Structure formats: structure tokens, C-alpha cells
Image 1 (cartoon, rainbow, N blue to C red):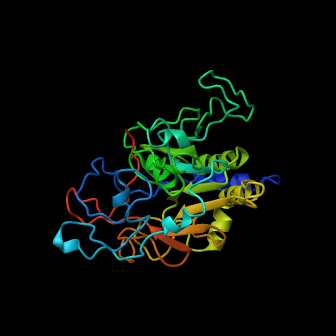
Image 2: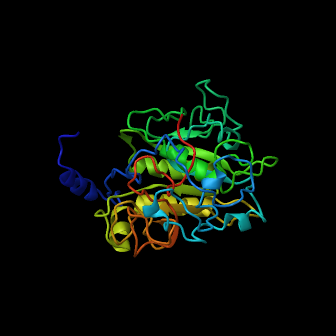
Image 3: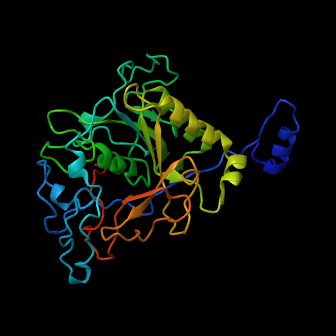
Length: 346
């Protein structure tokens, strides 16, 4: 029980011949340090002629940055540098998203009713909503748009106390519906006539309720078993939890086993030979990435501001494999011009 000494319990279990390894069920941390602002109406200049009719597309420097002024505040007029973006307009010449691709957002819950997300949410067609039964026999009841691994039921939540809406924010960056005259454009949200990639919500955070190592393991396996090709993970362990791959392998092999399972079983025939796991490097401003993202075979992403400098909060250095626009805050009340616009809860 909770009164027992964990180290003594681990030693006792390790002495049992049938036990191969003992690992602690570690708490994990969401890589977000502040609520996503609700008011995204700050004045900014046009960054590019948008390809789609989404009204906030002109403010999305992360998709196409021409180097024009981001903020009306003279102090920050040099914060944009042309080319500090993901060159999305060129990628859209090949595809704007494919509905056969399922992306698991392993995070806070995704608001599947959001007007700019609903059409691109994954739907488990084998499940009848809200009937209290596991219709498709996959071991999860009422998992229509994913599963809430914190509360252990199929209802994805976004209204828990201290819920920042981060899962919904991440989902919008990936697949908000393009060319629908609403909100933002997204990386793979389709083109208005053809739908984009589908978002599966694998909820491991619910406001003040935090998932554990086992919740994460179950979420990753669920995503692979239910057709996800890519998994986006905005979580990790404390920067002091592990300092090298050897420590991580010894202390956290069950999570890496799950990640490897996704890489092997999460692909899509004819498209990807195995699943792709993406991790945030962490938001602790330290000169190395957090695990599991830092592990040698995982894809770990650091964050950049619109002028080719590291975002003030990002981890950087060893363990990071790539950098992407993550936004910056200028410290000016009401000025969100250098942040990443996306969908939010409500």
C-alpha cells in the first residue's frame, strides 16, 4: 500500500525469479507552461497572400513567413525573418492532407466538437456512441474519437480544472479544416473539397489530473492498434530524470518498448513502413532535450521563434533532431503576433 517504502518493495519484487525488471510508474509532464490566450485579435500586418479563405491565415507566419513586420510595436519590428517557416505553400503543391492518415494527439483532450476541427476528427466506425458497450471488441468502451486514459473511459474531456486546451491547440496546427472560411489554415487539413488527415485524441492529461507511465504506454499501443500512422507527443519527463540513453534504457524500458511497438505496427500499407513518433524537446530552457524524446531513435523537436532563434522556453542541444516554429512571447500584453495561432477550447 502507499505506506510502504518503494525501494524496499522494488528490491523484494526483484528477488522473485519470475520478475525480469522492476520500473517505477513515473509521473509525466505536459510541455506547456502557460494557458493558450483566448484573445487572438492583436493587430498584425499581412504575411502572405493566403491560399485558402481562412481569415487568420494572413497571421500564420509559421506556415509562410515573408519577413514582413509581425508587430505594430516598434521595439519588435525585426522579429520576423523571411523563410523562418515550414515552407508549407510548396508542400501543398503535392498534398494538403490525406484522410487515410490518422494522427494520434497524445496530450490533453481534443475538442472534437470544435467548428474548425470536427470534420477532420477520427471516428471509430466500429463503435456505437454512448451505449456503454465495447462494440468493436478492442478493449475500450465508447471510444468514438479516441480514449481518455486518465479517467479510463471513452469521453474525451476538455473542461477539467486547469485544462489549458493544449490538445485542441496541437490538433489545430495539424489538421484544422482548410478553406472553410473559419479560423486558421493548418498543415494537413485538406483543401475544402477533400478532407485532411484525421485526428485521434489519446488523452493522458486532464487539467490537474496527470497521466502516468502506464497511461502513456496504453495510449501509444491504442494508437497503433487503431490505425494511427503518426503520434504527436507534447510530454516528457523532468529534465533531471535521465541524462543519457543508458539511464533511460535501464529505468524506462517499458515506454520505449511501447514506442518501438508503434514504430513497427503504426504504419499504413503503401504509405509508411511503420509509425512515426514525434516528441517535443521540452520547455525547460536547458541545453539538452528531455526523455523520451531525447532517445537516439526518437524524433525530437526544438522550438524556434520567427527570426531563426530558439524560442525563449525551448530545450536545445543534445537529443534534439530538428527544429520547427513554436512561437515566442514578446512580453507585451495583448500582443500574440509572434505566437502560433491555432484552435482553442471553446
